Amino acid sequence: MSETQTDVLVVGAGPVGLMLAGELRLGGARVVVAERLTAPTTESRASTLHARTMEIVDQRGLMPELGEVARDGTGHFGGIPLPLGGQPSRYAGLWKVPQTRMEEILGAWATGLGADVRRGWELTGVEEDGDSVAAVLRRRDGSLTRLRARYAVGCDGEKSTLRGLAGFECVGTAAGRELLRADVAGIDVPDRRFQRLPRGLAIAARRPDGVTRVMVHEFGRPAVSRHAEPDFDEVAGTWARVTGEDIGRGTPLWINSFGDASRQVTQYRRGRVLLAGDAAHEQMPVGGQALNLGLQDAVNLGWKLAATVRGWAPPGLLDSYHEERHAVGSRVLSDIAAQAALLLGGPEVEAIRSVMSGLLGLEAVRDRLGAGISGVGIRYPVEGADHPLLGARLPHAELVTEAGESDTGALLRSGRGLLLDLAPGSTGHAELRTVASGWADRVSVVAAEPRPGDTAVPAAAVLVRPDGHVVWADGGEQRLREALTRWFGLPRPTRQ
Image 1 (tube, rainbow, N blue to C red):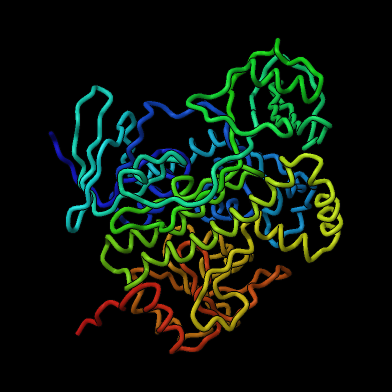
Image 2 (cartoon, one colour):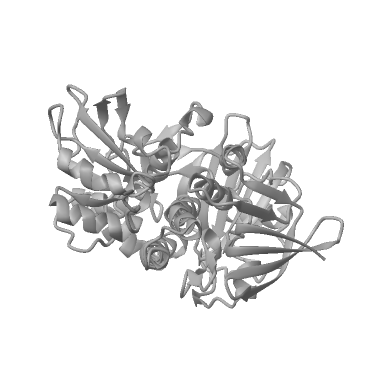
């Protein structure tokens, strides 16, 4: 059996695995992505990016590849309309990007950075061995190869092979109810946005290419234990019982079912094996949450894991991935469970839906729910957090730097840390920039001023992690030195 080596093995070449691969390469880690499918899927699957994910796409310079994207300012909470266009982000709202397109863009980006994507390679075994992980992979010709990596990350979905082989514990509830969905050509039915009818829930949306996505749930019907996707007769029959309409003469292009299962692994890391995306958490795909949650997992993990294999990570940095993302995932799963009850419950939930509709008339409620769905409300714990920006993402601002006009997103493009000095004048915080010089190989130092007439960052100076979250703001030289050491390790030795 042949053997190859790398720094990180990523299992799964969906959007989450490819996002992680690109982040690892930005951090200087060697990465192999193993994917059992021989070609990218053509199934449409998820189709929505939220504000925080769009900010990340911008931070990595991928907006031009997206091109013109349709935006919807109104989302929902359990099928009840929820305005999202007022979220504090330049990308507020719902952005309609098919998962297949996102996978294509991220694949080109990751391989362009040097990620090694190997299709037709299926994981069959894994064993942690001292300072490495040995994985056995079956190639498309049936031969086996051993790949030795310092770490392995499962991005292989809710039925993750790596999760099972590595012995992760996944807790929560199994699906009790399900939705059937299909992309169907050649039908003409009214568009429906979470329409509750006497016998069930019906959703229909016709795309510009004439294909209609239908989703249907029959009240009181439990989830079915499935070993394969439902056939079109089942979808059409359920649709007919709920809506009274016949779609059976249409041509199904994709059929799928999903339930209201809610599970999460107890630890996102076990030794040298980690999980991200649906491999770490299983939830009903309401409002595009699953894809966005997974991509944000990858961006949180990528720079930390790269720092670890490159040797400059401070103690506890890699463990902070679980600490930060498990908490976020738990909150999202809780919100989704509430939405599932509102969506799939029968007449018994109408009173609760009525109360919820009234609460959504309150701005504070809309802001709370919208911040969770969009991701812009994520704030990671930072020791001594006494500034409103600490732990939060760096807000967008148009800037003027010594190199010319720029913005906060562009300054994060390299995947390095950032000390942003926003003090007016030519010298700014010279003493802070001197402190940061010891981390020049990991942290960029930029002096900038707000572009005239534009909103400024509410701080005079900030230290930002590669994933865009602020870990120091206006705290003085000693606090800056502590934050640099906490997140970026020891300074490089001073040359004598």
